[in-house]
Length: 241
View: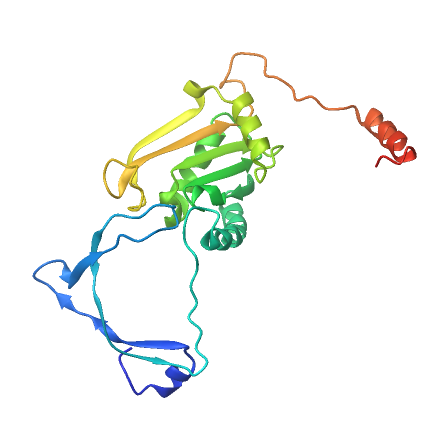
């Protein structure tokens, strides 16, 4: 904080640190120091790396100050739960740009951003790949998403059983896997060959249209509505449902 006498600001803060990040133009522009390794939201200790130094001159606290923090580790952890809430913010934003998107889900198991599952109302051959490229380039955060799986809107993307069913019944690995090399990646991702630069994979798990396949495509098994209504009445009469 630039003004140590800013009482109004101090009264509205639980903790307030006064200091500065000092410029050092001869090197990176800032005073730097090694940081880490820290246990991170990926479930691994991150690499030690160099970051700008913030030199703290003093810290002031309210009498009833509470320091907010989270437990961080292998998902599901507290940041993963926050990620689930943030997911619902992304859905309407994406639908404004891509009206064909029915739902969008960043599973906590994928560190809340490294994998995305998307359901669409497919309209033409190649539609799934268009959505993949669109997502990777739409919001800056999505350039860190390594895997995108696109399914039709008959799949509940919040249920892994449904997603896996779509992948195993609607995907030909050679035809439906999209690999993109040398793309920006999370620097915490030690699986990438170079820090901050790696590859991405898209998986088209939609029903295939003419032009995408020359075969007769399978139809999902569904009960006739009349039979379904009749069975519902029978089961209700028996007290089963």
